[in-house]
Length: 342
Image 1: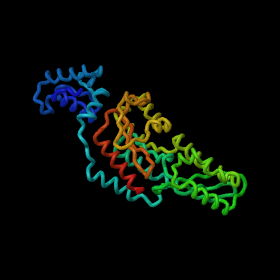
Image 2 (image 1 turned 90 degrees about the horizontal axis):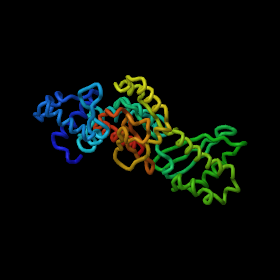
Image 3 (image 1 turned 120 degrees about the vertical axis):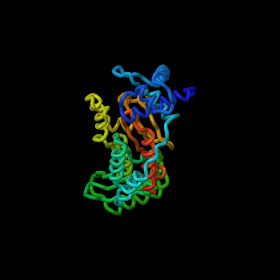
């Protein structure tokens, strides 16, 4: 692919970018008239034919024009795509919506719901926002409060300001003094460890108090297990934009419509795809996606950082995505989330 001529690259770039805009096959006459190559339609057809032989373009059965293949889109993204910076007005609008979030949003679902809404509204794609994955978070302190005769509110504070709460049921009443006492001991022995380290070593670290307060130690461990279970079941992910993406021409076909709705409703499927990455933006196109249900889609996402924890933000949409703009959009919102916490 590195040996493509200048004219081949220009034709491929034009076909990709016009297919992204129109969702229609691109003909040689259009390339001849709209580019600076000064080549006849016949010459352009030959170039297109060569690109088709390289599996960079394909010809739909019902058209004389060409569309890019997955391989052609990959070459475009890696070698031909121009960075499409967001407009100042777009960045200001997004920033203002983040600034308008009330204090406390960052401990609630609202941040992720609102971020998902903003992303889908601007991208017109299926938007995905995951909460930070707790296993790499560094434990700072825990508070326990009895909210009824058999229910305890467990408040887990992670370094960097992230807070996670869970309600646990207990047998019988437990005094406030006992709850405060066990919380103090847990904080002394476990502060500074990651939640993963705590889950793996709590038995040794809490051995001396397990006999004195077995119920409360188990309450703490069960709380961690419940939080982890929520992550595994997709409880940490928000998917939005179904109403936006179904307006794309690709989903006029009932089968495609049903498929994207199924993806939007399958949180476990999406959570499996959106795994934390170190820096940059990950793009997978069509058949590059291991999940069979995503062979007709592109997935673009990045990770944001909150202290030692990472969450993900991204989109799923037709392969005819404005890749340059989506990369800029996702990076910008990812940075805003990280800044909101810091």
